[in-house]
Length: 262
Ligand SMILES: NC(=O)C1=CN([C@@H]2O[C@H](COP(=O)(O)OP(=O)(O)OC[C@H]3O[C@@H](n4cnc5c(N)ncnc54)[C@H](O)[C@@H]3O)[C@@H](O)[C@H]2O)C=CC1
Ligand SMILES: O=C(O)[C@@H]1CCC=N1
Image (cartoon, rainbow, N blue to C red; front, side, top):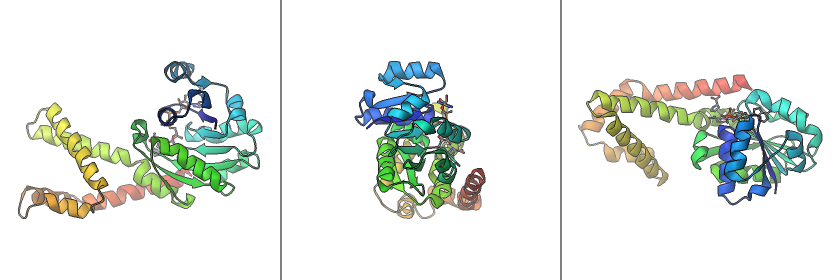
């Protein structure tokens, strides 16, 4: 199977690295990248080919679109005549519905929309996959397989992609903001910035692993919370500060913004 990646920045670059790591041969992956310096660096690092978009599209069984959202439809229009029947187009772009992409491709080409997130850069991504109206089940499965190279995958109806964007697409930024605030809080308490950073990152990593064990978050939280103790004092302050309400509001804002962008 030949995979063409159009746009090898953060997301496209992560998918490229994940595919090669998962055992795809460099000969089976073609990159289309507007920045020649980046294209040359990827050729050098991975031994892959870079080609003009139409040449890559003509060879590909799967075309991954990882350009900025405004570039998606123009790129599809520019490669449409080169796409063969049976090709799958997988778009990673936020806010571009399959209904906007499907008119740009010939009949017999499946369009699948994916919402990934940046931990894909380290093989720990979370992607949701949604097939367009004309996508075959095989095409949806191929997209899920592709994103499986850089993390976990769920399949959802496209109507839920805005909610996915609000939860996992934008989600890493929520964690990074919390980490930033938490580290600064440690510095306020007199820790060195290095120590505070180590304490926070390892606490996040260890807690994420405990969550992965499948125990409900409320039970894990109770295990940390002695009656009348330090955690109870901190949690009381977080509740008073409106943490839960802030999460509801934040994700609602991302959801609404995702709908607006579409
Ligand atoms: N960064 C994020 O957290 C997420 C990004 N996405 C989506 O992924 C897509 C890519 O985002 P990033 O990787 O962050 O952007 P980026 O700016 O890092 O990468 C885009 C790449 O496409 C290249 N490019 C632009 N036009 C091109 C063209 N016509 N032909 C070939 N290459 C072209 C650019 O040179 C650049 O390397 C966007 O549509 C975004 O909505 C989706 C979910 C999360
Ligand atoms: O902020 C954004 O619009 C994109 C979508 C999900 C993550 N980044």
